[in-house]
Image (spheres, rainbow, N blue to C red):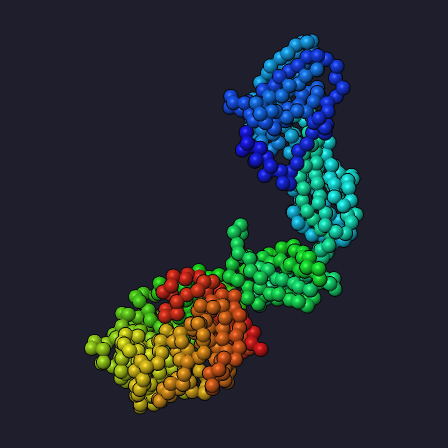
Length: 610
C-alpha cells in the first residue's frame, strides 16, 4: 500500500480530508467486546496507515504494519466498519458482536470507491483577480456516496475573512455564494463538506481583490472591412493594455496585435484576418502588475473567395476586378460589394487577357491556344467576334484606339511572334517581334510595348514602337540578356516617369527604348508578388508574398520610405485614389507563379494611404 499512500499525498495539494474527531480519542463507550479488523486489498493485507472508523462511532484508528486495528472495549451491537484512504478508495463490512466477544473481520478495500465527500470549485478560476469591493460569485459542487446533499454540512470560507455566509445548496449538491465584502488582498478560498461519518473534505482556489475593475468590450464591423473595439474608461492606474485576437473555433492561435502604455479606450483593427469569424479581448494591467481580461467579442472576418488568381486586371472606372483562374475561368469581382458578379469558363487554354474600349463598347479580349483572340462584351461576357491569329496566343493588349496586339507561338518561332490587328475589321496589320510567347505591357503613350519572354534562357526584354496605324516603327532588344532580374509574371509599368518594375526581387528599368537597369528595391528577405504606384509615380508600392506587408519605396532613388501591414499575404495590388486594394492570400505563396503553390483562396483588403 505504499504507492496508494504516495498517490494520496500528491492528490491532496488542494484537497484535504479529515475526521472531525481526534483519532487518539473516541466516545465514552462502556463495554468489553473487541473487533479485530484486517484491511485487505486484492486478498492481501494492506500496509500501515489506512484509516478505520465505525458507525455508530467508536474510535478512529490507523492500521499497523500487518494491516490491522483492534477496536476494543466496545458494547455489544451492530456496527458498520469502514476502512478508507482519501482520494483512493474504501471498503465496508457490517458485523454484529455479542457481549465479551472477540471477533475477527476483514474489510476489502476497493480502489475508486471513495468514502469522503467530493468538493469541486467551479468558478471563479484559480488565480482570478477582482477589484476591491467588486461582487464575486462562487459556485461549486459537493457530493458524497453515503450522505445526500441536503444532509452534507458545507461551508465557503476565506483565509483572510473567515466564513462567507448565506451560501446555498440544492438537491444535486450545487452550491453558490455571492459577496462584495472581501477585504483587499490575496485570498485562499475554501469549499468544505462534512458527511454523516464526520469526514470532511475541501477544495481551495486563490483569488485576489487587487486587480483592475471589469470592463465591457464592444465591437463594430465597419463598412470598409475594419473592426472597431471600444472598452470605455479605465482607472488612472492602468499602465498597459494588450489587444488580443484569434480566429477559428475550438482550436485557435492567439496573437497580440497591439500594445499600449497609455490609457486609451478604442482601437481599430485594419488587418482583419481572412476567416468566417474573428474574436478579440483585451488584457489590461494596473501599476501593481495585476491584470484583468475583458469579455470576448466576435465579428465576421474578411470574406474569403475560394479560387486561385493568376492574373488580375482592374476596371478603369468601375469597382470591378477581372481575375483569371487556372481552370480557364475568368471571374468578375465587385470589390465594393465584395461579391462575384460574373464568371465564365472559356474553351481551350487561355492566355493573358485584356480589357478595353476600342470604339465598340467595353470589351474583353481572350487569347487562346487554338490560335484565336475571342472578343466578348465586358459587362455580360456574351460572345461578339473573333480575331484569327493563326498561332497559339499567349498574351494580348490593346491601345484603346482600335488596335489589338498579341504575342503568339508561330512555327518557326521567329516568324512574326508579335502581331497587330485592327479591331474594326479584325484584320492583320503588321507583324514582327524577337521572341514567341511573351507577356506584353502597353506603355502610357499607347503606341509603345515592352515584352518579357517566358520560354528562353536567359530571360529577355524587348521594346517596340508603332505608328498610329499599328505599323512597326522601332524594335530594340535589351542589352543585359539576363544580367539582372526579369519575370514576365511579375511585371508592371508606372503611369508616368518612364519606368517599370519586375520580378520577385523588384528590379527597376526605364520604360523606354533604352530599358536602362536602375537597380533593385531594398527588400531584405522579402519577395515581391506585385507592384503599384502613386498617382504621380513618385512612390512604388511593393506587395510581399512572404510577409503580411506592402513596402513603400521612392520611385527615383529606390529607397524604402515606409511599410503597410496587411491582414494576409498580398498577391495583386491596385491603387484607386488614396486607397490600395489588395487580393491577399491567407497563406504564404511562391512568387514565380502565384497559382503554383496550391493556395486556393484569397480575400480583399482595403488600405487607405496617408
